[in-house]
Image 1 (cartoon, one colour):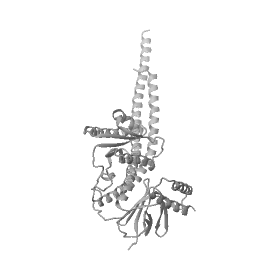
Image 2 (tube, rainbow over the protein chains, first blue to last red):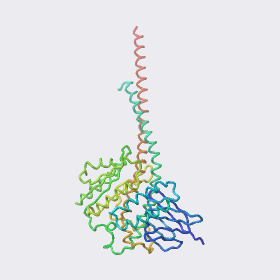
Image 3 (cartoon, chains in turn brown, blue):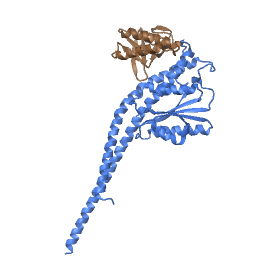
Image 4 (cartoon, rainbow over the protein chains, first blue to last red):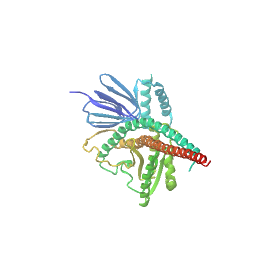
Length: 129
Length: 291
């Protein structure tokens, strides 16, 4: 019996990836989450982080936000910003990082935003290094 | 009877018009392919988003506590109509079809004694609506300078709508746009986005219990505004494809009509040329006979 389930990552502009996978690790809002076949139905959010797709090979995407639905062995990730790593356009990631660093210093942001930004900075730092 | 010279000039001008319409058709065809691709690529996202929300809605038993964006304000007094049109003309019935649909809806709303507010997107639609319903327009958007509309643009409009909603400026929000079916057929559509329409026939058998993280309410609160932007973005994409499709057909027709006209004028031209030759001959012959 196959141990795989199907994964779709969609952005408003296009279909980013559609494939069968063994395991996916998503940066869900309250912590990282590994998803295997026959996971219970789930709806959750993403915080900025890395989506790791495990198959014969391994693929990584950087996401800023997104919505995840898992049902009937279909994992669906809706995100407006998924960048496959290693990225060809490193410059844009660097500029994202500096922007986020500027934002987190400002006083007006809420705790929730701060939480999200801190993850964004951390992830971006780790991948742009 | 126009003189030979006049006919010649007319033929020339029609021909040059034909060249222009032909070029416009080609451009539209090229743009159409891209726009159509985009529209088709964008569809799954908005559909899946709707689906997730639908699944979430099912888990909410108590409508009192549900977010207002989903169930509405409970009133039915003020309507907000968002009319999406193009920024350029010469695309057949594209703009006027949307406006026609919107106007019938406006009339209905007003005749029921309800209040109306309009947000117009795109300059062509604004011109059409302004005359009769100008005083209802609360906001105008135009993305004339953009080559391609991005998700962020849709988000600007979405945020504006949500802002108005949070200030209790309206109870219902309806989106008007053209749905792209194929190159020749575009269907003007009115879609209600607030409160979220209950398409309960969709995906009925999928009655699962989901695990939520964080809580349903929190997810819904975050997801609903996103969904509005998504729906608007989808409408934009459909509209862009429809616009090009509509322009292509319109310009194709124009080219053909110009061709017909050129044929007709050429026949006319030849006939009158022949007539004048015959006339001259008769004059010469009858002149020679009288000698």
